[in-house]
Every structure is written in structure tokens, then in C-alpha cells.
Length: 579
Image (cartoon, rainbow, N blue to C red; front, side, top):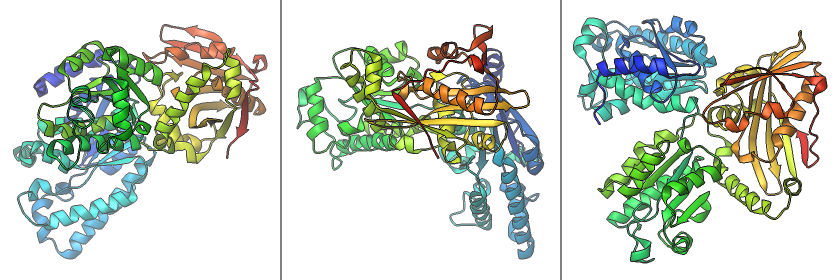
């Protein structure tokens, strides 16, 4: 399918502006070059993924002041071009006296430092690395401009806070071809150096950052086996006939595919199988084949048998308690791929290329869809946590009642209040949690840290441990306080899908409301905001005794008078205070 022209982007973007709903996601683009073309392209890119993006372009060559001005933006994009540090710098740099050049570099470093400090409270900052390639790409050595770019980049990287992500424009130049990126005729007339094609490629390149910030990253990689994890068909070629030995041409391809999958698993992506095969054959390969790098302990789920793959993928979604839109599925069969694409379009489905050597590249091209803005301890332990959950599910069948089963788990809920060290994980939950999420606010780590410094905010979180293992930090509530009115508002209340069904949300609510009472809070307001994914949480506040004030198809507003609250007091959940 051909990429849309700029005219088509303008038209489609106007249509999407009318149809994409939700809170506006505001992006400001600041820079010292003309970047007006990016506005509609970036809006179209995000709106095509259901994000109600609004892009505003800052004033030309006014980066420092604009870093003050855009205080309500959800994200800032910085185009700080080397050629415009001084008018005609690309030609005059080698001619400047050393003192003048050093003075210009020092001035620019001071401005970078100021801008990054101004933007440190913004949830997401995309800062394009300086590059001289626009004017030096044909020269085989390093020119003065390249050295200036390297110095400024090192300075910026040393000053950047946790919310800054650096964008290397050289990757876009490499993918598109630098001549296809540049419009030097426009540059000399209006300081607009980049073509539409560049801005379109740039929008594609940075899209994963915005998807991650809005909870749209993929979380699960499900793989077929035959001609996907190895060359050959285990049922026909046998244990010794399949190929994945890294010392052979074809085997090296499949060995690399397995390494890519293992790397994703290490970073917190859940790995699983969906294969039409004899389960015993697959178990034997995973258990004892000498060339197999993926092992059973790397997987959180297996659907191996003769059921159709659409049904199997639905079961995977249900068992892992995640949405279909979180899954990437890889298969070699065109029939299977097309069936999944047609019946489960929410799943990103990839077909193994007919040219096998292109297979690892296909996976690498789609690595950005798994991007997250924070990597936490919970990510690194996620596979083990899901395996513990599977053990809990099997254990559940041994008990005649849910209460007896929950009591057998010996659950311990550790509550954290305004603990700074948890901020990365709390932000990650805001970005990723969809199902048990009452308001689906997508706060980033900078937001959480800002709340921690506000006296009118309280941040409660919990971790959960039982006799089978530690589920990590899996619950969060952010509250706004008005102590003069003796009132609080629940802005965020969410819980990871890993601990759903264990009644810990009620123990958490008991503790949270008790803490508010100790602060002389008399009333608590809350709301449920419906999304396509959080139906299961619709009646949670009702079940806690909150009264409905107003209700629409998409929103329910609540009030709780604290003296009327009846705590659950679940005896089988021990609640302790964390540090």
C-alpha cells in the first residue's frame, strides 16, 4: 500500500479530528528551523491510532522562551538545528576565530541547560540530537561541524532528566536516504530544510514513544513453531530433521529469531506459543533439542494442539487477562495469518517472509511496538510472576470455595504512601493498565514525581506477596485533597491484571479510606470513565458503597460519606505498611 500524499494526510487528518474521541494529547514542537509541515503529519499519525493529538508549533528560533510557554503540553519535540546556531553557520564555522567559536558553543550549552531544566517537569521530551550530516554527509572524515555536534550532544545527554528521550536523525537519514530528506532550495529561502517525506518518516520513528505514553505498547509475543522457530515440520521431519543450528545458513536465521524473542522476554515482553502440533513433540524440542535456545521456562503460555488459531489466541488473551490489542502473533502460514488478521484485527499479525533471510529483519522492524518508557524490576520478573499465577489457577481447583482458596494463599499486602522510589513503576502502570482502571489517566513518571511534591496529593500503591511468590507493585491510587473542605477525590484507582480476582482491591480501599479518615476527611468523590477495555471495573465503586451522583453511558460520578463506609475487613489478607 502506497503511503498517503501530503494532500491526503491533510484531508484524512481533518476527518479523524472529528471522529477520534478522548482527552486531547497536546504536543508542542519547538525549534530554530521551520517545521510547520510536521503538524498535520504528526496529528494524523497519532489520530490514526486513536489518540486525540493536538500539535502546536512554537515560534521560529525561540526555543528558550517556548520551553517556558508550553507548560500544559503532554509532550515536547525539540528541533535544535546545528546550521542555525548562527546564521550561515554551516559555512562560517570553519572561518570563525577560535574564541568566537568557543563562545558560541558555551552560549548554546547554557541555553540547552536552561531548556532542559525548564522542560524537566514535562512528562515526555523528544530532543533531536545535533547532526552536521545535512552538510557534511559526502565527506569521508570528521569536519569541524561534526565535532561541534558531538560536543553539544555529549553536553545535552549529560544534562538530560528522566523524561528526555534523544532522537537520532541519522537513523531517519539512513532509512530514507539523506537526499530524499532535504530540500535545500526551501532551506535558503525559508530555513525549511526538510521535505514532507522526512517529516512523515520522523513521525513514524517517534510514534512508539507516544503510543507507549498513551498505554498502546504491545505486551505479548506469540509464536508458531514449524518454520517459525525452526526450519522444517517436526511432525514430518522429526526431532533430528528440523534446523536451527547457528552454524548453518538457514539455521542461523532461526537461531537469531529465537535470540530476538529471548531479548524481548528479558525486557518484560511475555512469550508464548500458538501451534498446530502434537504437544509431546513440541515439549521434546523445547526440553532437549541441543540447538533450541528458547526453553519452556521462557514461556508464559502454550496453546499446542489442533484447535484453530483464532480460538487459541482468544484463549491466550483470556488466560493472560490482557486485551487482543496487546498481542503480536508470528506465523509462517499465509492461511493462518489471513484468518487471524480478518477475525482478530486487534492483534498485530506478522507472516514469516518467503525469503528466510529477511525474517530477523521483519522482527527488528517491529521491535518499536514493544517500546516502554520505563523498565522496572517487575518487567524483569514478569515471566516468573505469570508462572506463579498459573500455579495459583491450578491450586484454585482444589478448593470448594473462593474464600478457602484465597485464605490458603497467605496474602500480604504492603502499602506504600508517597514513596519516591516507586515512581517509575507507578507511571508504567498508568501507561499500561487497561482493564481494572477506573479513569485510565495516562500519567508519566514526571507527573508522578510532580504529584509527590504537592501537599494536596496523596499517592497510595501496593505490592502483593503470597506463599507462591511476589507479584510486585500492582496497585495504585492517586488522590487530590481539599483539607479545608474535609474532602478528597480519587483521580486514579487501578490494579494490574495479574492480581485480579483475589479481593486485594477491597483491602486496598479499606486502608486508603482509613488513612483519609485519620486526616479528618469526611467525603470522597470518585468517577468511572468507560473505555473499550475497562468494563470489568464499571461497578467497583458501587460495590464499595459509593453513591452514584450522575451517570451517562460513558461516565459515572460518585460520592462516599466516610462515616457510612463499611470496610470489608478481609481476614485472609495481611496488610502492612511499606517504607
